[in-house]
Length: 96
Image (cartoon, rainbow, N blue to C red; front, side):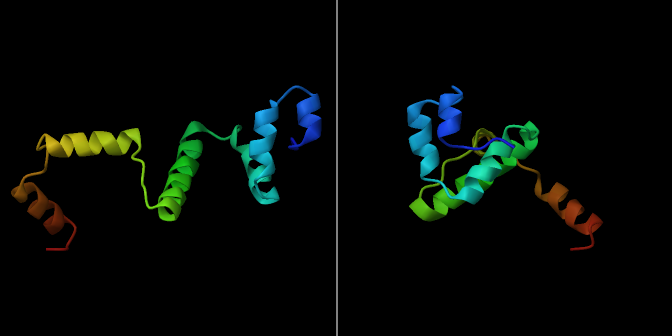
């Protein structure tokens, strides 16, 4: 498993600025981030979403993902399900 630190700098894997950024992280975060690059893109995106939610909670500012922006754009264009379609959905699922 890769380790963060001076040996990585000596091996040429990181720039000095990268080390400063990484040094501020807990050992647990360093360890998991070392593994993230090997994850499928879908899992990496899930982690990014969780991190955005934490950052929003901490800062009070939420940055929309591209997918969220697309959903909002669709909603602004009025691309909604009709009332009849929604009622039929609820009925099919035994809710209404």
